[in-house]
Length: 395
Image (tube, rainbow, N blue to C red; front, side, top):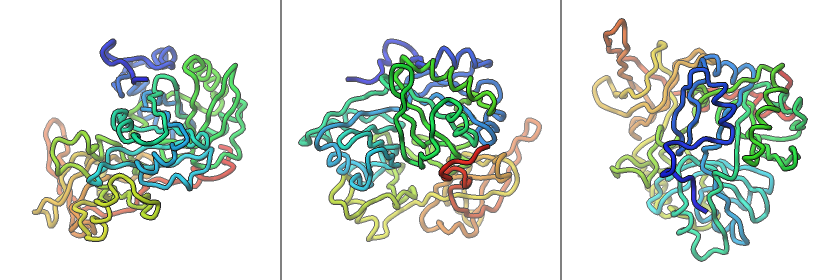
């Protein structure tokens, strides 16, 4: 099975498109993995406010999805990814990443253990040829199921209340767990996962049931403030949470044109997920050498910045003179009332002492250069207790 046919249409429409296009007052669209997806339905600030104060629906069908199944599926994925799948029980989800032989990150994503020998890998980039090549010698089948599975993210503090009103009891569903429910004549898979840093769920359904699911959720969710949200609002929420995004916060190793642009999981703050004792995995030798020799050249850090001008794309300086790094994602957080940033910093400046950011702020058609001191801060920036509370609170 191949992925979507990008040569037959400029942009494909997801199964939710009849509803997303009707709701998109601005007809604001963007491309995502060959699909047309809503950037903003009407007001991205109000959509972001709904993520933090009510609930939102976000079409995540374009997310790349692979079915990996067979007697040696666990062994194959343990060889490819950083974490230990032997510790992942059926019905659970694992945030993980994978590297090339040089120990450089190719992508990150979520790995669902749907059955003892059946998995779903969800990620940003496309990896089917690499997955098939890497699976040689294993008794496993790998297929792209992006088109076969429709998905929508239901995120926000009232999201559990929306699901309860819709007839789906998620009171016992813990973070990074999933449960199967009947819906119409088929099944609906609900996972307690998301990309906003808040209480939230992702719903996985057959494309033929997508519109019915959207209508059912919107009808039952109206008393709880449920509205559609576009990519602009979701990306603001993910920056508030301090989450990384491929091709925004790091370049996938297989796409990098310059060899100094790639990063290892140790340099991206993902070293915590490496299971060094599970046996060999792709990139292990290179990562061991980097760890033991303290060879990391970069560190990814969270920053607090004075003022309210977003520093996205800005350069960092040590002592105001020497380039020390750069910012990949930044925002003035409406939720935290803080000016936040995610940055790559040269390893020798990772403590962020005497570090400054150069920002060009537009003031009435002219740009003014600001040189501001930065302060290192922990990620995630936004991590409310409600995101992990089980059962979730009623809002």
